[in-house]
Image (tube, rainbow, N blue to C red):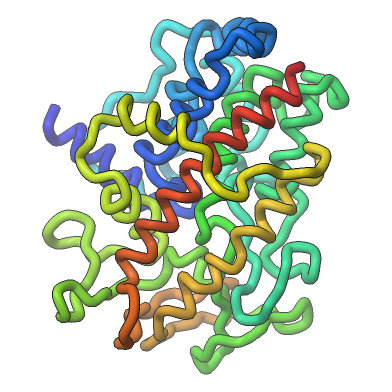
Length: 358
């Protein structure tokens, strides 16, 4: 069992752009929203959610869009460990599992579209670019498109029998997850490099090579004044994206009990969390809001040993090293950012569901 748990941790840390803030971060987003909705005035919304989620909470379902990657054919999963692991099940909720399996089958890992690409977009951080300013790194199935698609399903504007197999139940589950994803800077912004390995602004005619949301950059930060490689465990070098998924959440919240943390974060209103725009516009507005943080997450680093391959749209490797300068250390800035964004995501998830299900 210890080996099985260790494998799941490794898989969660390593797997591509889809694991924003890791399981703990996503659960906190859902738990905050659960508490924000647990009021008499939200009785109608809560009844609808209870029916759609078969009694499960937003906290419980928020990690499912990552968990279901376990159903991908293993030949399509480059992070599949060799140790045997138990297949993932939505225990006690066979109808929800059936709907999620239909969703995975309709959007297979190796297909176009793949359910993996629904979790992120890759806007260039090099210039002062917003989502709508360019084409590179965007797609009709990225997170900025999939959030409003799920909202339209919930509102009845898109029928539940659609090509993506997103029912109202699946839409709630995806939104509980995607709201966490879009508040993680490296799920929205990416650095691009030219063939010489230098950061530059990509264009449709010269897209260059992306850093895959930081997944292709090995990270080193100053710890107690010493430049130290970030590691998954004792012997596995960690990447920039994985750092934001995992370590920032640990640094932000420490070992405290998540129930108590969720209570505190749900009761203290975060600054500037309200969005004064129709739900249809939220995803693009959220992407634009997070871009300055994605830009800073890269600007605080210098890039070395960037490797490219003409047969790839991404770099194949490289180093991201914290710049040595006075001021707030990267790890302090990143953990403060993660704490703020996770709280905002929880409040916004509750507000979105209030509006979509009213």
